[in-house]
Length: 387
Image (cartoon, rainbow, N blue to C red; front, side):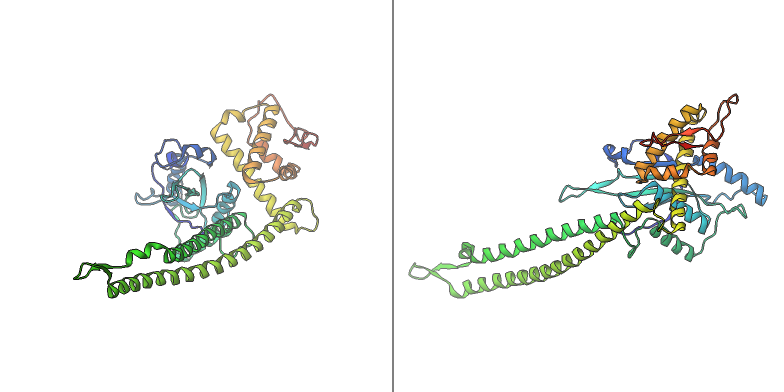
């Protein structure tokens, strides 16, 4: 399964579409609940900042034909998470200065196959980006090799590049492909059987041509009958040979896919074992562990910021309510991104992480909190982490 990313000027109705603020006739409402959203800022607010910064930095207004905010549609897998897309956003910013400030994962678009009536989902994500060059105040200028690199980064971050090791999504895709090829294989076998059965059936009696002779007797016209048989047999033999060739090809492809499928299963088993040990095993490379925790931290902080943007009143709260809110968001992020709760516990041991979480809340000025305050994560009520 391949992915791609292509940025274009953002549309005026982008937020309405991406965040499902309107009803659209081409979506399945029963699947809309599976969509996921994240936003750092509204389009109007970001555009105002871009225009002000351009004026401050260059002394000129932003050009009317400039495209300071752009949007990309990215092909994703069914199990692509918001954490994966935050990783992609971080790489785009670090390597190409593209700053993503809105993300929407859509799982409610697609179509029904005309033949099978089966739902074919169109899994994709919308990434809205700030395209301003912070050094000049103008829009970013990229060369063709930058756009090529953009594709490489996307495929790498979403684990959709050909040849990348271990991916549940890729395994499911191959298993699905095997199933389809096996169905085609069986259909071809049935077709060959039908052809052979038809050859042996009484349908060929219809090919016999009889005419009355001059005496009035109904007799077989040998030349016309033979001609009919030759035409039909020639047609059937061509069909039969083609079917056999396709059958051999499908059979070979199934074997290759099954071998690849077995290999992927081994890779996935190894990755699952690696994930279960990544936080506890001393044998795991420390840099890899730290990189994983940084990704978890980034995902959690962005989730908290998004909740604050949506419901700022919740962040003007007491210590007790803050603990419950952080617990709830940790649990939600854990489920949506397949992150073990132990990862959040590890993060909450760090003073910098604690300070960053506290900085998002606006407490009553008459109340003071120090690092003896506690957050108890879900399913870990007996183990307390100090803040």
